[in-house]
Image 1: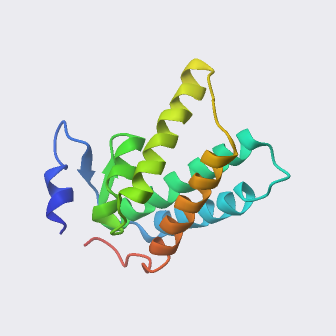
Image 2: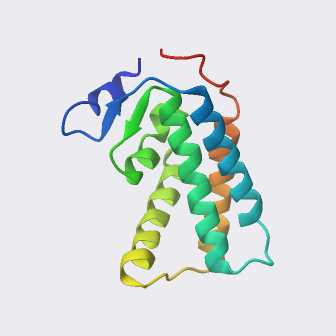
Length: 143
């Protein structure tokens, strides 16, 4: 078990322990890849590309947490846990964290202030997460 993730797990904490599920893992990866492909299509609106890339990244990060046997209490922790789930550094998770803030402003306050640069950075960060995740085989069952 990953001690950093264990420390975040328990009653009232950001993660809860839950056995990995191969079907869920595979479905999250499939969903993430489909969205990532569509996010890269410049014919789609900037807002759609942002939404697709953000949700692809979340699917990949959630799949990584589930592979390790954890379920997050909120979306943000899935991004923050990347150093512990996939070994990715701040150059990736900080982009995802920034996009999470932007997503929340758009969802809850109607202020989705994005541009081509942030969407490009998000798609690139998402690709890095996908490449790291693709090295993991579906879990065989409870770890």
